[in-house]
Length: 100
Image (tube, rainbow, N blue to C red; front, top):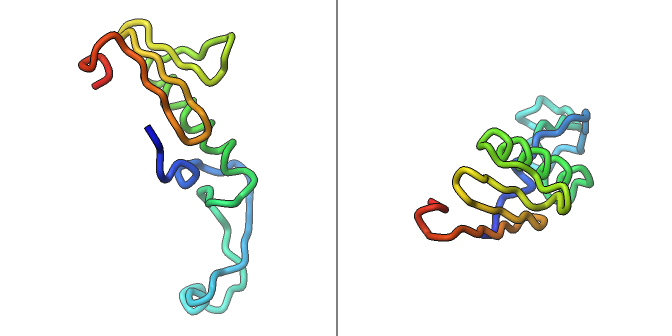
């Protein structure tokens, strides 16, 4: 699976400001900078914010992270394995209904 908007889903922990893009300065009453709340493409913190989000979602759904490979998540109850590589996911299960 490819997560198309992966880096847009991460929540930033730091305060990061950027110059307002053209065309929206009127909305912000002439302010020259905006504070980012969520990650955007090209931001150095985006991959880390994405991984933290994925990690927390997997833990909420009873997945355990492999101690041998931190990009591998296993749900023993459902017999489902998910391998994370940047913004791609590889799913492995004994049958299709286990994935759904």
